[in-house]
Length: 143
Image 1 (cartoon, rainbow, N blue to C red):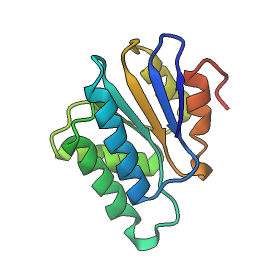
Image 2: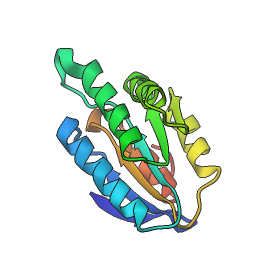
Image 3: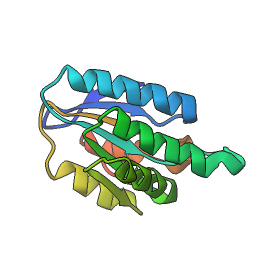
Image 4: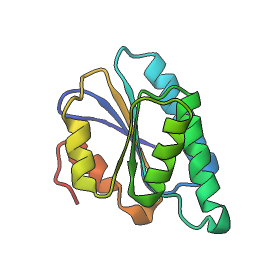
């Protein structure tokens, strides 16, 4: 997990190389821990965990449930799998969960109200290219 900061000072945790249910859960637990130590929000930007076969839908639903249980402040889901996570999080009582079909819209949404004490996790399987979102959030160009 690579750590960096956005231009406004928010901590960014970039973990876009690989994602499976266990690594996603561990990353979310780390986000929750760090978030509790800061005064800002914890923001999870999550995309697809690939190569899960028939268990894909239930695995993504489980992650949405975990986001709600860990009280992550905001969930931003990318793509169809992200939408599945968002839907489950909302069903579990989460109040700040949003799905986006494209990276650009998600970046604009997240950047709109970032504060210096927020912590952001960007996590998905490599093939989803969420590393472009992480690069953009730290001041680069959306890839």
